[in-house]
Length: 179
Ligand code: 5GP
Ligand code: MG
Ligand code: MG
Image 1 (tube, rainbow, N blue to C red):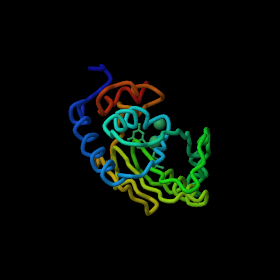
Image 2: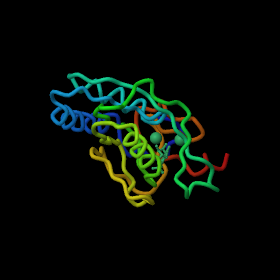
Image 3: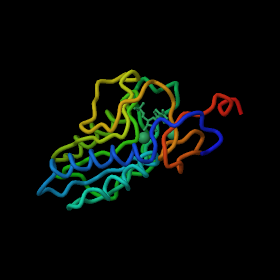
Image 4: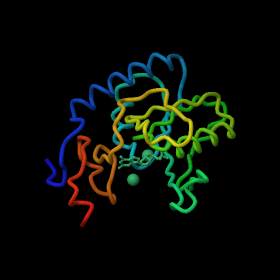
């Protein structure tokens, strides 16, 4: 195990079980459709790739990278697009795939934008949900697991760009933040 990890919250096996359950729901709900799976970079990359592998049906994949503006303007809910989709969402059944929903600002922004761009439907699949962190009223349609209000890393999620490659989700030792 990575020496910076204090404890593992979700093992590789836990995550696989979550993904299988979510994929089965998504496959059933989108039967006969060709959804556009929108992976929100970078955090959702491992989750998305494992999830779609479990969905043996038609779908397309695209990527979007967004970041919140600094703390000073965060209350505005302004989100900056770093990389936009290659695909038009007009008339598409969009499934946003997120790593974790915290304040909900990122999700609110994306959902409003896809609405404006005239998607046919917009749903959200998130691996983790932190309901205690919510500032704007938004919820995901598919939730892997609810997590308490602590900072998690691994399986796509970073601290200062590290730990995304860990195959499990855990919390960091306090001294790592002090470095
Ligand atoms: P929000 O819902 O606040 O707009 O933002 C969600 C984003 O904040 C997530 O996609 C993720 O990038 C980041 N985030 C929120 N909570 C955590 C966490 O516990 N760990 C990590 N690594 N990122 C988080
Ligand atoms: Mg994210
Ligand atoms: Mg991050």
